[in-house]
Length: 85
Image (cartoon, rainbow, N blue to C red; front, side, top):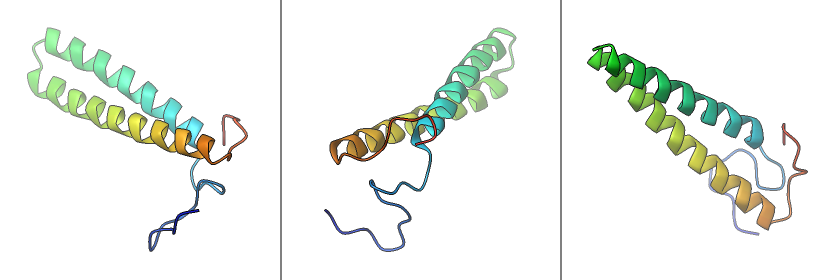
């Protein structure tokens, strides 16, 4: 097992956050932000569309990071696969 970075909370075996729930919320935020951004762009509210697309990009990055953490946990044999894992 690798050394834990200084100040880090949780490990792959004992997670600090519920990754499946966090992934679900990130995908939901990505979908809602992208749809509302497209609707804002169609309505001519460019500033709002840009803000919503920035939120969508942030949600996409979060979803990718969470998925990488889930895969790392699966490789180490951690997690039970529940929604609130």
